[in-house]
Amino acid sequence: MFSLNRVHIIGYQTQSVEIRQTPGGTSVVDLNLVVPYSFQSEKGEALQGRAFHTVTLWGSMADFAGQYVRPGSQIFIGGRLQTDSWEDQTTHEKRSKTKIVALDMILLDPKDGQQPTPEGAKLTLAAVNRADIVGNVTRDPEIRTTTGGKQVLTLGVATNDRWKERSTGEVKERAEFHNVVIWGALAEEVGKVVRKGSRVFVSGRVQTRSWETNQGQKRTTTEIVADQCAFLGVRNAAALETVETSAQRHVSRDRRGSGASHESGPVPSDASVGVSSADIPEIQYASEVKVEDLPF
Image 1 (tube, rainbow, N blue to C red):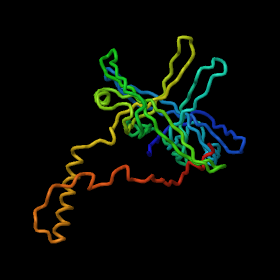
Image 2: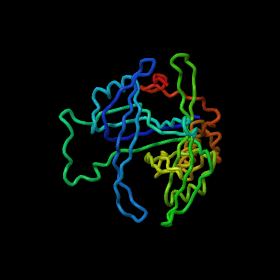
Image 3: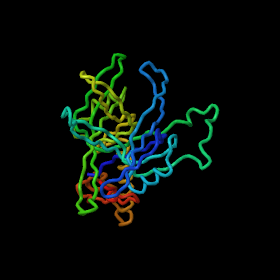
Image 4: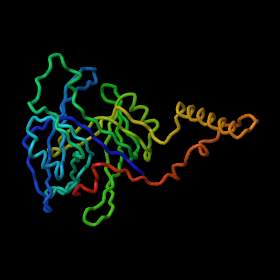
């Protein structure tokens, strides 16, 4: 079943761009973007933060970035989250790092350079850090209460990505596992209704945080801090009322057209009005940026 894994960010490049070449001659660039943002503490204080993101570019997009992106350049990136895993050769521990694989890039600086910060501008200077995923919950949500009395929930969501190998034409599939953090009243409701296997839409910002193990080793984890979580595939009373009203009008119109004189009967069930999801064929979504064109 189709899933969604999309990220949109607007940030600033923090360092000089270095182009690498794969053994097959494809250009690869890793951007390091900083995205300033504001948030509220548990005490309600307005605070400022900075999120750092690694963005991988391939092919002509990487060549373009190597030529035109400079430290301080403001850039829009549209892409997907990808987590790479490996085994540490020294400790043999499993390690992982989450990055953004770019599908779109727009350079936002004017040709004559960035404008000075407008006086009094605050809300309009907010950067963009948005992740949207549609997938299945991989474990039952875990909810706890902070020392400040605020509820926080964590859950895992899996998405799938398909692509075609350029050399063999073989269709392959890769699963991505996303850590999601939800706060407050939304966390409480999600904890009551969402379970392992539930299909959900999650929207929020991407955050990477660091900590040290008991052995003094630095570790990082990347999460989606969600402000929206929608339970999918369930009935909605407000929507169902509109569907039933529309179905009733449709039946009445058909009966008038056929010359039927008897009164309208009950509204058909949803099975007879719509199409069962089991009957919907798999849809191939075309895009100007094709996954099979990416060298991985």
